[in-house]
Image 1 (cartoon, rainbow, N blue to C red):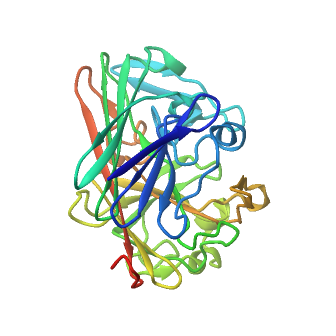
Image 2 (spheres, rainbow, N blue to C red; image 1 turned 180 degrees about the horizontal axis):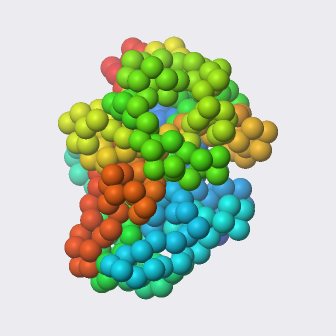
Length: 347
């Protein structure tokens, strides 16, 4: 495995792992984020420098926390005590644990290189009281690339007080490799038969909705255009997907999702031990950022944010995001890229 490091502007670094087939993963210590993934084409959304992330959209590709998603009014109760955490002024709700969050921290990193895989291990801390959350929280995010074109994300956390912890990675995929084109003709399959219904302000209602027979039914693979052109109420209020889907199985041996490029030559398989995945279809309209010299199209990317469903602090049936004091949290997600075209690499 070849590993290179270079300057990513503003004091940050870009670390690239490349396997024997020429497939690469690039990550940065700004937000412990993924910047680039692929071989002959770019498969994820990203910017050319740390400055671009800080100026345009710090969440893209980043490690997110303490709590990915929204907490209604920034309020929750833990061990009988009420907490008020910082809120996003635009919505009045807590977003991704508060700003600045994990996404703009400069993480410490080390590198591990082996014959079959290599990793960049990022670490940081969130001090007691940051954005109103209790506990000194130590976090580790490990990005690994294997010879089999698997990008694995392993996230750990431990706090000296009971707290909330629900991290994710905010990666966006576009398997065409052209962000000026929407993902309409990408085909999606999900190992899920239920999703969390949302209010117009994207806060979960608490209802776990059966997706079977609806526009949000991906139990049989179908193109994303089938969703975007539907008149489904939940789609209309978000102008796409921005929903947690509850997984039928939560283990690394069973795929959680599969995304296939329009020409069928690239397949992404997502496996996770998380109980849900938040699917967001870059519903930016005309307000998408400019990346690598190109303007992001409406629906120009799709996320697979594996986590416990946002709203779990209110609705126990969603799962638990409580991290007891001095207990280690760990979650693993694998994104496997299968390149089906025949070429000189034999893949």
